[in-house]
Image (cartoon, rainbow, N blue to C red):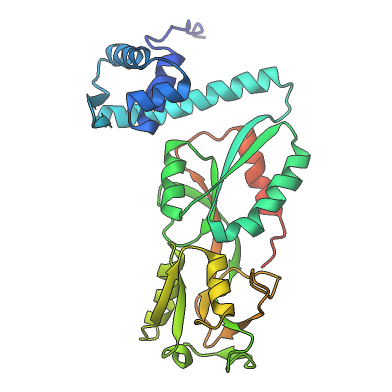
Length: 307
């Protein structure tokens, strides 16, 4: 039987790794130093020492142009994030007597936030009061970038434009519908064909991937809508439609039939039915998930989400 191998001390420190990851995330030495409340020179020296320990140039630093990782730096970044996550998890598991604690940053596409966030911020928080939940609403490309950088831990998005370097769990599906003012001439119909709306004005929810989805359902039928206004706000779409300025094509539904101004709206089924849109929960594939994040993922999988 072989003798157990004696542990050896690495030539680098966790602090050096943390400084390197922060600089890679922020894109500048100065930004990372400000974030971690250290001097820029201390940050720069630590990264230089890390490069010496690794015997590799990890980044190119240019004044006024920020910091660019070399291929070796990109490779180290993924490993460093895992090492730091494991170190944090070790500290919390020993010091917290098994109770889940620490921060979890939840990313969410804005139109999903009213459905997704309340259960997490109330029900999950009640189960794990020591877990510090915070939220970040952004477009899906922004959420994907922030998952990669480690700024958010898990994101709730539509199943369109989801990056390949993420893990995902399907939560539920939604069917797109036509939104009309209650006094619209077609408001008494049970369902509508898209071709019936082609000469009317569309109020487009202009935020990816919503805008791409809306235009794609028309294109699939060889149609091109007449866009009158574009807005990144779900509620602005509802308000303009309620005033009779056009119709909307939306996926998320709300129980309140009125706009912010109290004007009434009606939702109509699209016929023939268009492809449903799935809602996914995603997280970075290459990152080690702390127990608190894994617990939130399992909780979200078991929620009976409204559809």
